[in-house]
Image (tube, rainbow, N blue to C red):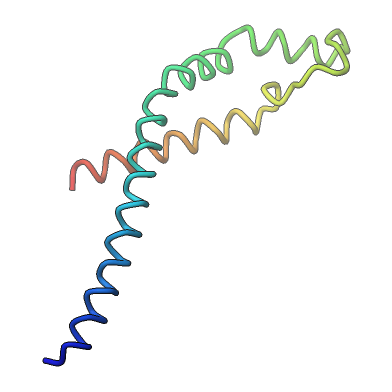
Amino acid sequence: MKKQDATERIKEMEEILDSVSEVLSRVEKDLDEFEKIQSDIQKLESYYTGLDWKKDFRLDEEGKLPKDLKRGVLSEDGIYNLLEKNKELMELIKKEDEA
C-alpha cells in the first residue's frame, strides 16, 4: 500500500466524518426543537378543530376583523397541511425508533 493512497483515503474519510458530524448535530438540535413545539401544535389543532376557529373564520368572512390582521391561521389548507406534515414526521420518527 502506498503512503499517498492511505493519505488520500484518510483525508476523504476525515471530510466525510466532519460533514456527517455537522449534519447529525443539526438534526439532533432540530429534533429537540420539534419535540418542544408539539404542545403548540396541539394547541393549534385544538383551535382548528374547535368552535373558536369557526367563529373567527365567520368573523373574517363578515369583514369584522381588521384589514391588516395577519390571518394565515384562518386558511383551512394552511393549518390542515401543517398538521398533516407534523403527523407524517411523527410517524417517520416512530418508524426510525422501531427499526
